[in-house]
Image (cartoon, one colour):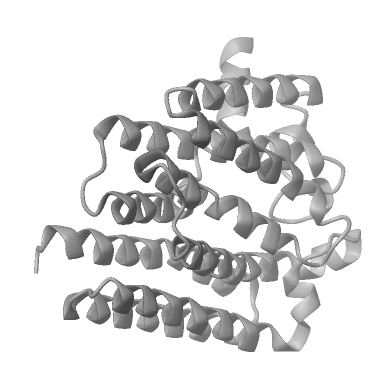
Length: 288
């Protein structure tokens, strides 16, 4: 029975029951792999990166809960997490984090040495992010940097270099992450103010919707510019209009800054990533 309890608690600690974070990390990774390979990437590299997405996202959730274990109990959305409820001890959580990092290391060792060096950045960013909300109102930018790090890694693994234009893709994903994680932070804004946790939702204040909208516009502009540089066809731009429509819908949801609609807007970004990924895959596969 104890093993089952620990397994279920570890499952929740890794957020395996809430895969939205994995999806939001997966879409830009796939986009980068398709861009870097100009079509279907090598299956071994694809498998390593997809597995790495789920492992590193799980590790990120574990270290996040370790960092927040003393404040999660005061926040409505997080007060039942395993470390707060006592289902898992801090020592057990640290052991799980170490185990996940070892799996990630084993995966990255299947790639070339330059990509292995780049992966150090991913580990540093993923580990530092949970603690940033104690020191800065911009932790969402650190998360964006972490969630985008698979992009240069994908180009390095496939092309042996990271072309200059790929950093524009990195920037687009970083800004998109800041936009959707600000929506996420809007859910907890009142609780965060009480416990002293910082976020862009607090920093932006009454300008949160406008800044999110500006970030979303810049993301679309960058993705459009990349399509222009690579001479993509009309279908790519039509799918960008679909993304624009999704962003407008999100603006509608967060108009009242209420918890549930803001969380729904955050979840809607899964469709944004899906459409962007399909736009790139379709460009090389010529589905239409």
